[in-house]
Every structure is written in structure tokens, then in C-alpha cells.
Image 1 (tube, rainbow, N blue to C red):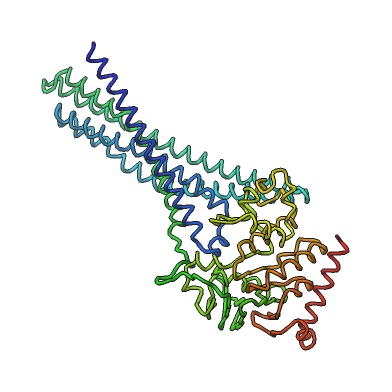
Image 2: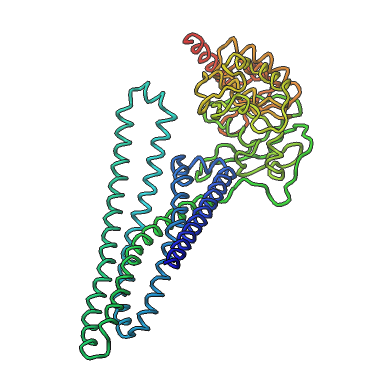
Length: 523
């Protein structure tokens, strides 16, 4: 009795240790895999994210990695237990009666056929389910980020219909998967019963002829019964294995993507930056596109100079701005910073010398302070106050918790103008030697724009600036203006020179002025 108690306690301890170890190991693996996945996503170029739905990336980062963890934590253990159980039971069977053991093995051979059929069908279903989960996640994410537009246009029924349709298709795929698993489990459950019938027939014959005792036959039948649970487990293991393989395949579609924009061998850091920017024969077209956005473009911006970029919508102004901090790489030609090709510099070093503010300001679900410093190691209070003053973003002091106020996802608790001013403050914070500004004042009112421009002018005196201009009033900040037309530099000069000599420039500014006046009247 005491021995049974000891054995029971030992079994309890070993089961606890096994489950605790496998659970902790699989959770650590899941955490490491998710961290690696996120780090890899950050290393990939902007063009990769242009072509991927955010919902598909989210489902891979959460659902697919969780599927891999569940297989490692449960499926792998069940698989090992099943193999060990089969091996031990068949050895015991062979020792008792090798002929009955062979019959049992022959009855189990259909496992291979059933498993192969299941594999061919279930891998397609599993892939469809996981892709549909990504599509459903995308719909939810689009609703969450676009809820204002959806409500403003009264499109809630339309979005609900889209969601219902995708949820219905996902549900249908899950039902198909359940049916396929049920079919496999039914087939596998029949095999022990088939083995039992064969053992009874052959065993009864052997007992009647005295080559096997009744006790031996009963013992052998007990061994057959011991295979019932492993046969059931095979169904679970096979389905989890297919789901895991599909998840790994989906993860590898991202992890196997190599960063096109990365530190090249021999890349160096730039300790000091004067800010001279030169574009030599620059040509650019987006990946998977044959259309040239920029072609044979040459420009030079001297240290401390502000160059404005003017052109029609779609002329390539914003694309050109993306090339300086290497958000995209040129297709031909080169971009030089202080005479060094930006591709020969460490990305971290290059971007540490460049402040950027784009037309669509992106803020994160964090405090105002965290959005401003963006991980910079040391930022003094004076630098923060100066940047906020330049951007006319001193409204932050009136927020409930000042700089520690959380601005919500994408900063939607703030107005468009407030978000844009914070983005501008973030760009000028720390006085980077190079500024790339893409119409950073498009969402602010005319009075605030004038105040910001006066403050920004003093900042631009000491830095090299590339300023994408959509509003004529902003041209006052530029020392020179480059007119971009058809992806090329059509003219370069001061604002006064171009107004006097270039009809296209005059026409563009006249149109922009009328649009600006229209916005003022509407406001």
C-alpha cells in the first residue's frame, strides 16, 4: 500500500515537472520568436509594408506564433508519447505472441493511407483559415482606424456586411476543418477495433489448438486496448502538425524577406555632419513598377541652405524627400551627404543626423513626451521647450497631464493641426543638421502658420533643409526653389527669379494660391 502511494506521488511530481518544463520552454520560444518577428518587421524597407496588409502581419505575429507554441507545448509531447506507447506495446505484444503482433501491425497499416489523405486536404483548409483570419483582422483594424470616416459617411451597414461575409467564410472553413478532423478520427478509431476482431479470430484459433492460453489472449487484447488512446491522439497530432506547418510557412513568407535597405558591408558611421546634400543622376521607380517617378535628377543643397520643392501633384516631390533618409533607395544614380553616398553610411548614423516631418503626421499611443523624444537618449527640458515653441505646440502644457498626457492611437485625441505641430516639434528637436519637411503646415490655420514660419526661419538658418511646398506662403522659408516636372528638375532659382522667368512655376503657384484662399474662406 505504501509503495502504491509513493509511486502515485512520484507520478504526480514527474507529470507536474514535465508539464511545467514544456509549458515554460514553449512560452519562452513563443516570446523569442515574436520578438524576432517584430525586429525583422522593423528591419524591412518601407516598400515591403506598402505591399502587405497590416492585418496579415498582425495575424502572423499573434495567431500563427501562438499556433507554433501550442504544437511545441502539446502536439510534440503527444507525438512523442504516442511513438513511445506504440513501440513499448508492440514489443510486449511480440514477446507474448509474435504472430498476433504481426496481425496487429498489418491492421494498423491503413494509418499511413488515412494520414496522407488527411494531409493533402487539411493543409489547404488550414492555410485558407489562417489567411482568412488575417483578412478578418484587417477589416477590424481598418474599422478601428477609420471609424470617423465610416460614421461620417454612414457606412456602418456596409462595413458590417463586409465583416459578416468574411466571418461567415471563416466559419465555413472552420466547419470544413472540423469535418475533416472528425473523418480522420473516425477512421483511426476503427483500426483498434479491426485489430481486436483479427486478434479474437486468430487468438481463438490458437487457444483452441493449445498454442496460446486464455490468459495470454486476454493479456494481448489488453495491449490492443492500450492502443486506443494513441490512435485517438494521432488525429490531434496530425491536425496540430498541419496547422503548425502552415503557420511556419506563413511566418517564413515574412522572415525570408530580406531587407533591401540595410547596412552594406563596410558601411561607416558619420560622426559630424555639415549637411551638404547632392543628388547625382537620380532615377527612381517603385518596386514592381516600370514607371519612372524620378529620372536623371541633379540637385545640390549647400550647408545651411533651404531648398523648396514645387511641382504638380504626383511629380515626385515627396518621393525625392524619402530618398535622403533612405526610406527608399535610388534605382539609379546616388544621393550624397557631405560627399558620401548615403548607402555607405550606417542607417542609424545617417538618420540620427536627419529630422523628418511628413504631411501625414504619425503619433503613437504613448505620452506626448514619448512621442517627441522617440527614444533619444538625452533630451533636456530646454530643448523640448524650444522645439515646442518653434512648432507652436505649447498647447501641450494645457493638456490634463502636460507632457505625460497620452494622445491615444495615432494621436486621434488631438486635432489635425495639433498632431502636425507635434510632428514638426519632433523633427526640430535636438537641432539635427538636416531637415526634411514635407508640407509640415498643411493642417494649421493661417495665423498659426505665419507664427510657425517666423520661428522656423531662425531654425532653418543653421541647418540644411529640403522643404516640399504645397502652399505658396511656405516658400518664404526657402533660399532657392526647385521646380520638379515629370520627375526631372525643370528649373532652379529664387522664388522671384522663377516667378519672372518660368510660366509653369507661375501657373502652379497661382493655382496653389487659389486653393489656399479657398481653404481660408472655408475655414
